[in-house]
Structures are given as structure tokens and as C-alpha cells.
Image (cartoon, rainbow, N blue to C red; front, side):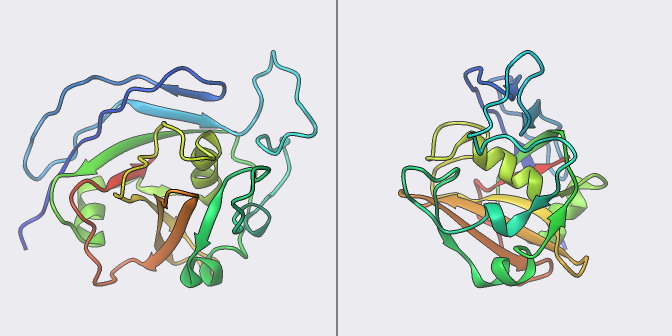
Length: 204
């Protein structure tokens, strides 16, 4: 099967605490290859020079575990750490029971699909280092809790991550801004679904 290609995802962002991006406003087309983009940095921890606000839900103290169900829950109120309007049944079943270790800072590469692609085709293009964690997903969501501009696109196109579930099986977690909140879904790798052109892919 002809391998579908990924194209460079280029995003400009304003500087913000715990978030950094360096990008180039050009596009390069190279069939059957993954173009390395600028790194997107994200951290849930306050900067060393900044005092930690104990009432803030944006930071996770070092050495604490990340309990997925305490963060990924439907809540579109003004006080929500991240406005989530919908959690898919597959995500709830396979991922909300996960407990992950403290992740500190995370660095991603981002890509955008220039044509419809399956999970296997995307993974073949990404190669090694394609996996993310739920902490990674939450970190980026926390930077854009109300659909603000940032690394995650807020159009109708999905943002996808390859994450291992409770059983250790690799799955695809997708996040789409639904207008009033984030919609978080999941599907098994190898599902018949094809991700549309414009889908943004995150990998380490």
C-alpha cells in the first residue's frame, strides 16, 4: 500500500508561562517522509523562579502521581481546569483508570496530515518515539483550557496522540475543540478509521 505522507505543521504562538514554541512559517512537501518540525515544549510545573499557587489546578507538584480520572472529566464550568464537554466511552474505559508517574517537562514534535491516513500509515511515518502519555495530553490541554490558541488546533480537525492504555495496549487519543469544551475520544490502533487531511499529530 502506498504510504501516505505527513506534512510539516507550522504554528506561531505567543510566549506564555510553561509553554514555548519555535516555528518557521513555511511548508515543505516531501512525499513518503516525515518532516521534523520545531519542538513544542510544555510543563505542568511552575517555573523555579515563580512561587507555586497552592489553589491552582494547573500545576502538579513534583513526585505526585498523575491520576487520569481526577483530571479527565466532563466539566464546562468557568472553574474547570480544562473545559471538557465530552469524554468518549472508549476513552473512559481504557484510559481514565490510568495512574502515571510525574512527567516534569515534555517536548513534542508536531505534524499535520496532508491526506487521509490510517493509524498504521501514520506510525510507519513517525517511526520510533511516537508514543505520548496522558500527562502529555493533559499538559497541552491545560495550556488551552477554554479553546485558546496554542499547540492544539481548535478547528474541526482532530489532534491525535498515541498512548498506551490500562492494559498496555497502544491506542489513539484524539482531542477536538467542540465550541464549548474539548471532546476527548479514543480508538484502538488498527481501527478502520482514517484520520482526515489536516489532522495534527503529536509525538515525542
